[in-house]
Length: 262
Ligand code: 13P
Image (cartoon, rainbow, N blue to C red; front, side):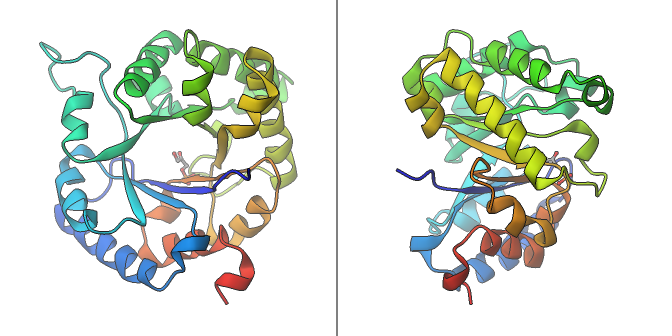
């Protein structure tokens, strides 16, 4: 069965309550025009402070799912500043982004911690969006594939095949994030194919054929059609271009069969 594409907007540390409302007004208006049967799975990941606002606006809109940008894997307790899976479930959060390079680099998150989060998320019945990606230096040294294999193998440690096939991976080359310089679509396709081979080696070809792997890094309406035309790319994890309703809607359309959006 074909993998259903995903278009996910990672708002990062943007949008207060009012801005979240304005953006979601635009997205919900735009999405009403689109044919649900041909749509990708549409996901928005607001900051925690806007979760309630967005949850309230989409609770009767089955075309949009909610994601969190982070979670703490512990059930509750003395973890100042953290948010638990049980708290996210209150807002009907379906996905949680983990392993983002910004959290790895700025907040020193380790592969082991990311693995703990993935396990906790799956145990709670939510879906992790597990990010991986190489630095420019690693790419220039020719160690991209090896690095991604290590990140993926560690993130998936002790996770069953059943859980892995429901999970989502996002390949986000660090040098392409927020730079306006998207990875060439053919190369992104090749790299994602390598990630899929890692999953096949760790589990089976069947699991590798089922898991959805997204591309992220300066995805824009002008790049999405070529990206979505690549057989290995199952959608996009999008930062900057998800912050404007028009461009987010164009990205969703870019992940639909052309005949259905004309
Ligand atoms: P940009 O789309 O702004 O490059 O961000 C990509 C990203 O990091 C999504 O998680």
